[in-house]
Image 1 (cartoon, rainbow, N blue to C red):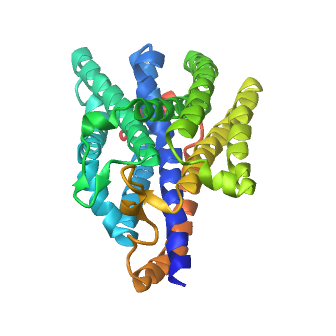
Image 2 (tube, rainbow, N blue to C red):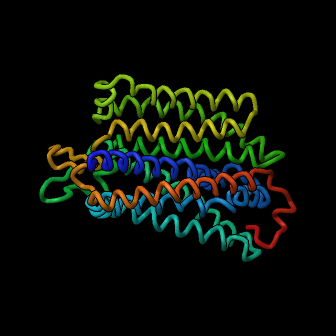
Image 3 (cartoon, rainbow, N blue to C red):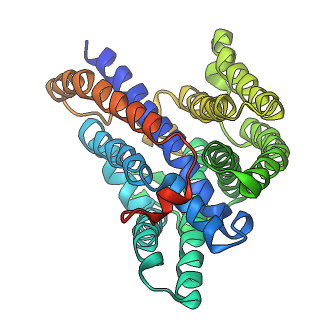
Length: 343
């Protein structure tokens, strides 16, 4: 029973990260595209207001994923926030400054003021996207730790495979963000978002191919797939969703293209999570030191109580988010920008 609970929570942990990347991915992508697609102050306001009602709600999934790590796998949480302290702290500060930037940008009618906050939005969107990719890529290939603790530093994390993971995450989020903008923008900005999504898709596909090859070389991710070939359906779904995104984008069916992009992110996350199982934090010094779903979990009682809570409340949260996305799925208009609460 306990092993079953630990396995369930391992994949729930992965699911929460996948939902976070899927939801926050597009608002981080739009922030990263701000200086390139926003040719005027009006364009930039449309871009910011396209995510305005949703970005803070999306980040709740980060808190949820972190909370589940703390409650379900406390040993992993402790190790994560010690070994990955610097990148996680940089992500935290970036997300704080990003939220402040959205709120402060329009408070003063000064071009210099707005440009300063535009730069902050850009940096605080690009940095988390890359650092999340760097962190998870390093987890996939294993971290240098033993009975004496973590033996690396920030420079160690910036290895070729880690940086490739950072670029992959950034490209996923850029495409996802450009597609969201095609749904919510109009006019010339819509045309630029469409063009950006089309061009970025080719870059994403190239980086994804490189990452898959590097994953085979640097990580044991494929071991679970070789031992259970039926699992290869997951990367096949990822590839189908990626090419489906391009096909739907060509047809200018933007909403379905964005949904296909979301499916790409979720299935790509699960491709790596399944390959990682049962490891949560593998050691590349000796696998005996690895933190797994079985040696780092909370008690059976804790996992049982949490599972009941999750089964009740997570569907409610997902339902609320579907409702919020439906309400704010229309085009951002001049009337929207004129409202008191607009950015």
